[in-house]
Length: 348
Image (cartoon, rainbow, N blue to C red; front, side, top):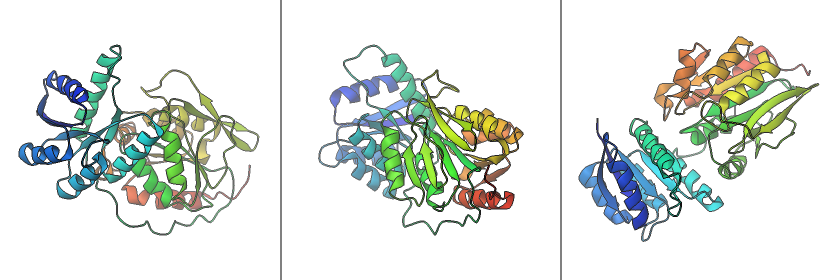
């Protein structure tokens, strides 16, 4: 199947670069380039693209307003072209809330080196977007958090995700109560984006959410997000769990890697871990989840119907590493029900 792609960007140089990358791919067709939202709207109606690459900063109507209107009128897989800045992170996270599938950094046009790698990244993401499940922005507030009846420090919830994961993690965390067991999270994101993401989650969740710090003690009622471009490793010190941040090679193609976090938890916490693998492209986390299951931990996976991309959960299921496969909206309550059943009242 040929993937029809529409490029929307106010920069003529970016339109030219992305257009050339797409034209050179035999499985893609560049159906048009648009410099603003009005031209883009007409091209969407005319060509019905399979994937749209969209710049956030555009004249007349900004990318977020266009995206919001598009998702209401004609939901289409959208790949945001983002600047790797704090302002860019805020806008990109808002775009993901509105239904964009994923994002990629805006290329640096003055740097010839690395364009080949960038070209491959954007082609891979376009192919992924073409097969993704577009999810519209959720309206309204979530229900009251599920109840956690035990109090203790030895149980841990671990969450791994990639494409589509920012919104999936938000949905899971918003359903957890303030006295939840400690939560450690690895989401594939670049540096800087995880700082902004943690702040956004902290403002809407009952648990306290922060970007993880090296040497930090892991506490109940708190969620810790692995910083972009650093692995998060959990170790046991007496009765405590502590975080180590590692600037080492990529694992399973990623840094941070879900496998690094899951494997460390299998070794130091074993049966005290409840691991959750959510939507994402690739297979990162599957081997680590298998290790947690073998160590006696509980493992949950998001089902295909509610995933944006059913890659990481599918691989974990294929390995036999998953105890339960659930729709996204049921994961938090099942997690707490399992932890309540196991009993988490004994301090180590």
